[in-house]
Image 1 (cartoon, rainbow, N blue to C red):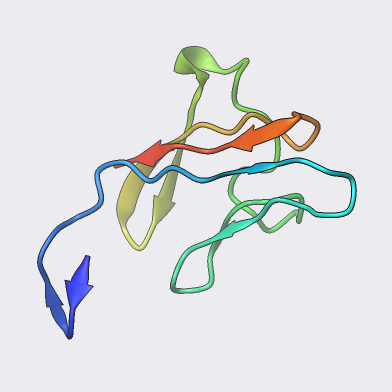
Image 2 (cartoon, one colour; image 1 turned 180 degrees about the vertical axis):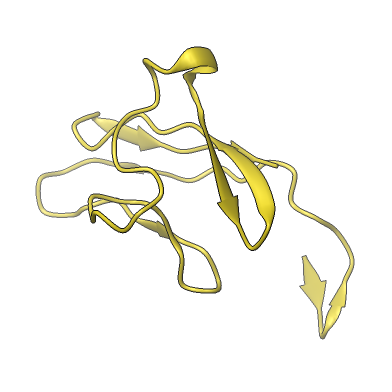
Length: 84
């Protein structure tokens, strides 16, 4: 979390979700423009992580490792908690 240009806290868990309907695609993009979660081939996570060990995938954004959990594009509720 920033106040002005000063960091006052670091995110430990980021949670994002939305109710899936067939007209909207879920996408998570970092402040530097890195596609973290999405259907595009350039995104770091493109499929559900629920079948992976521990249900998550490790990705690197700006030299920071994150454990990303993603329920998948076909889930009725897209869910994506992430933590460093």
